[in-house]
Image (cartoon, helix red, strand yellow):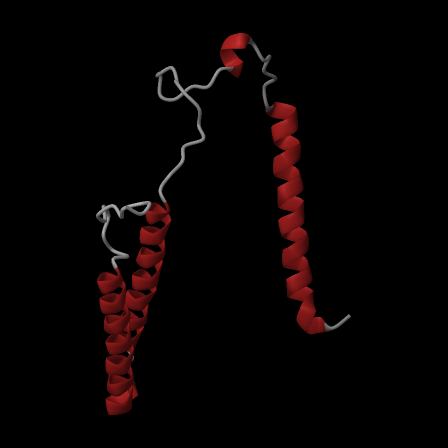
Length: 128
């Protein structure tokens, strides 16, 4: 056995052992519950739920979530650049300007296409 992998093997064994210990203790010490009619009913903060849990959400919610992830990653990139700005020099500054310019162009294109409009005007369906 390679001596370099010994700490990794010890750590893996420790993790598996700790997981087994926690699962075993929860099985031994955990209480048993009986499922009653009241226990099987859904419970949300003391309010009796009405209706189904399957809601049809507009695709715009997912689109906004994707925009958030994209611009959040952009903010993380700019933050990393700001930390390493002195080492990056003018070349790094130029790269950041190109990156932000492309991102601004993409945002302008999305805005112009109406992807950011929450309630776009309805299009007429059918012909007259």
